[in-house]
Image (tube, rainbow, N blue to C red; front, side, top):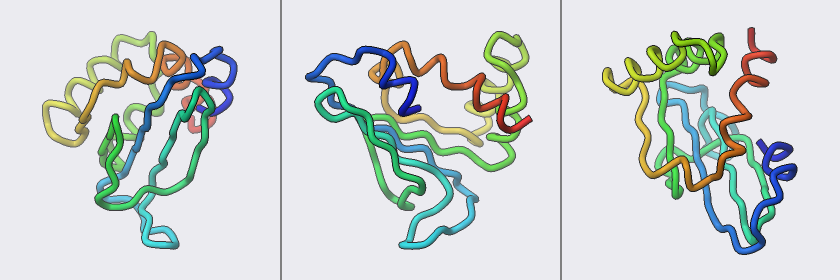
Length: 119
């Protein structure tokens, strides 16, 4: 994410935060659960592994481990990806609070490299 955001020529006044947390994730050190926090402050991206149980951001995604595995084997152009994402949202296995478009169009380029690393 940090690399994609850095290559996106972000506006220098962009301020946005993103948290993704596995609702059934492994507890990490320092009271964090499996997940991440990503921030863009004054157009500069930063990243932290782990998310607090109740940590919020401008965009917060909560997902089960099984739901993340379903998505992380499907490329973004695969119609099954949108179908799986919509089903996870309907079932409550995935919840999105906030507007992910606030992160910018570069965010759409991040999914497929994740698939490459996890499949």
